[in-house]
Image 1 (cartoon, rainbow, N blue to C red):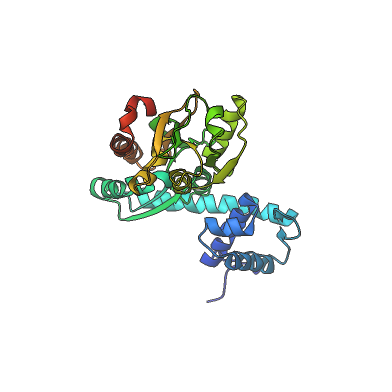
Image 2 (image 1 turned 90 degrees about the vertical axis):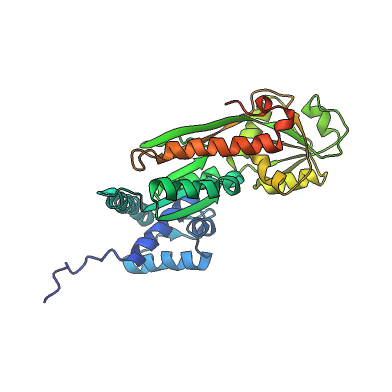
Length: 325
């Protein structure tokens, strides 16, 4: 039988789809390394995917002479088309997964790294036992990771500290709003009535500016005209809590950011923060109408599990002082 495909058309193979995903990830992160990390690839593997695309289309797609990497004109054109293709494929996959199904076959979830250990077992049990989910894919990370997963439709749902209000087509379910606490080494005996007084004894240890929590804290402190003399930055709550527990500084953390450290029996002294207005909100964000009542149920479950942990570990200073509902 003769080949009826037009002579210049290219089949949409799994390899080509993966290469397009790499191009989109590199374009959105501006780095080959970060783009590769988002997709669980090595940097050489991601580079090879881009090289394959350039060979396939006979044109340069990425300007490798700049930092961060930039797409060429041809790369920008292909990026635009690649997004449309990948979104269409994801929509088709989602529709086929749900048509005529009494259950959800595959559930892909992004979870805030600081609470992933606490809620993962209960989340899996809920999805499997009440909704008949067969395959579950979990990604722990920061809110920036969740935004990429949702935009590229690599996640159906995210449990995150950013509600992504600028993204359309999403449903949002409130988990909790929690106030930041003043977190000190266990043997700290200095003043706690102001951040200025504390920093005379200890440097500030906080989340880095690459994280949503780090940016939020930095912006709030600028509004308060508080300029730390010394700052240590880290991008994981366990790194922050372990440094505070070792007496290397003080921090501003919410109860859920403290949970992993408390589970590891890190000793810290907790106080109500001597400044007002600093809090964060946790939300379940999902693509609208795709998962029936599952997102709302996950929000209820997460609220319940996190409240239990907060009461267990930091309830000694009064739950009303650390969670705002």
